[in-house]
Structure formats: C-alpha cells, structure tokens
Amino acid sequence: MARSDGLALVPASLALVLLAGCVAAAWLGGPPLVPSDAGRAGGRDDWVWVFLGCLVGAFALYLAALAVLRRAQPSLVAVAALAAAIQLAPLAAPLLLSTDAWTYWEYGEIAAGEGNPYRDLPSEYPGNPAYDHAGFAWRDTTSVYGPAFTLGSELVARAVGSNPDAAAWTFKLLGGLGMLALTGLAALLARDRVLAAALVGWNPLFAIHFAGGGHNDSVMLALVLGALTLAASRRRGAAGAAWALAILVKWIPLAFFALRALEARSSGRRVGHLGFALAAALVAALACWRYGLDWLRAFGPLARNAEGQTSYALPHRLEQLGLPRNLTLALAAAVLAYGLVVLAREAMRGRVRLGRAGCLLLATTPWLAPWYAVWALPLAAAEGDRKAQLVALGFCAYLLPQTIL
Image (cartoon, rainbow, N blue to C red; front, top):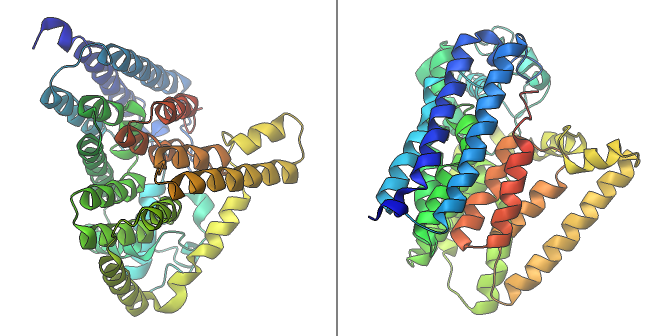
C-alpha cells in the first residue's frame, strides 16, 4: 500500500479519538447524558457541549476522510477494522441520548410477565423493572414494533431479569452488531467496496445511536441488505425470509420491498415467495400464540405517532416558517406520494433506487429521529448512488444535534 493510499485512515482514526471523547464525556458528565424522561440530554451544560463538540468534530473528520478516500484508497481490511472500532466504541458508554432500549425492555417484560404489549399499556405495570427507566412519553402507548422484534425483546427481558444495565447493554450490542453487518453487506453489494464500507462504518452518528443508544433500526436495515445480498447470490428463498423478518421487526422496509417487487415483476427476475411466506407464517404463528391477534393493532399507535412531529422533521420546519400544520402534513404526504410514484416507475423500468427511497422517507416523515438516517445511507452506499449518498450525508449532518440540544 502506497503511503498516500492510507491518508484517509488518519482523519478517520482521529474521528475515533473524538468518539472516545464522547464516551468519556458521557461518564464524566454522569446521569445528565443518560436519557431523561424528555428524551434529551439535560443537566450540566459543560459536558453536554463537550459531547456535542466531540461528535461534530468526529463527523467533520469522517467527511474529510471520505473526501480523501475518493482519491486514494487503503485496503478494505484496514477500512473494515477501523469501521469496527468506530461502531463498537460507544459500547463502553452508558446508554446514550434515548430511552428506546429500555422501552424495548419494558414491552418485553410485559410480554414475559404474561401481559400483552400490543394491548396493555406500560402505565398498567408500575412494578415493571423497566418502568422507571423507559421513556415517560410512551407509558400510555402500546408497542409499535413488529412481532419479530417483540418476540426477541421478550427473550431479552427473560434473560436480563430486573437489571437495567444488562438490558441496555444487550440492545446496545445488538445495535452495534447490526452496524457491523450493514458495513459488511454494503461493501459486498457495492462496486466500490472500500468507499461503501467507509460510508457506513466510519459514520460516528450511527455509532452514537446504535452501539450507544441501542436502537433497532440497524438490525432492521441489516435484514434488508441481507435480503439484497442473498438475492444477488440467487438464494431466493433465504432472501424472501430476510425480507419478511425485516418487515416484521419494523414496518419501514415495506416501501423498499414494494419497489423491489415492482422491479422483479418488470424484469422477470425470480423471487423467493416460499421463503417469504414460510418466515412470515412462522413469526405470525408465534405472535398469535403469544399475543393473539392484538399484534395486528400495532399499526394503530404507529399511525397516531405519525400524526405527531419532532422538531427536526422537515414538515415541522415548514410549520415554523408560518405554514399551517395541516398544510405542512398535506405537502409532505403529496411529496411522498409523488416521489414513490417516480421511484415505482423507475423500478418498473428495471432500476430500483432504494437509497433514494430512504431519503424520500426521511424528507417527508413528520417523526424524524437521528438514527433514522440509517434508512438511506447504507442503501445508497450499496447501490453506488452518489446523489443519494450526498443527500443522506446531508441528513446525517443536519440531525447531529437532535436529542442533545
């Protein structure tokens, strides 16, 4: 390897150092950087600013590393090793910036205690060991997650008992492993494997919110990229099963699956209907055994959540400019519908653009969180779609301060 080929490793390694600074700030700042009921880092401003400064600096170095990488590339092994270090570094931190991991535990505990997370409210179980740790805002909301994830959360709850640290670390580990899988799968699918691995694996925002925050979106997207990888190797039955599991973890992959289905139908590409059906039937049977038909009601609270808005959502930004709320939501729905029609037409012509679909979802959802950026960037990296990559990186930069300030 020529000396210039390793230049990108320098800013990426410095990004890792600043990420370690985030971990240190989380410990030195104490509980203020552990999620509060409001879902934001509160308390002592000095450590909050140190944390944010380290994260912004790490992201700037990540962008600099990508710029260098386009001119001179190190080996894939070196890029992957550094990606693993970046994505797993926040495992050393306390749970960061969100109580979602404890909410997963809370729903799992309800199920493990013979309750039903799709019917029973967390507020009905104040003795639940997760009750005082999970987000206050979700105490009167039944689970919005798919049955595959809820079944897994129940297993986690049974394994960790009443230990909040073990529950948090388990979901943090799953989030971090999901990011490693996404990094590897994006590289396998992409023509430029080194760039794809760096785009996904060197991203400090993902590290903070998955190995740091324990969110399940990395696992969901890993199943989506796993399905694409299996399909590319003609293991169609396994690809269909992976699609079913992804959708039954969280409903977002339905949009990606529909576009792939249109492309397959137009091009005559064979797909794994049997694998999809068997996996979906197995999960549905287990869900009905554990939760009856109530798991089908998950769409209800999900729809109610979609009626709300987070402060960083683009429809909310339009509302801040003076547009009526109903108009901003209508505009977002219209843009989403038009964008999906355009993408569907592209898919029917044999070219599916899942990275752009992810960007479209980020631009139009009224409920936008920083970890949602993973819906777009790994897909854009795998497809080698430069425009979608730039838009996805823009969303990552835009969402950096969310949940911190």
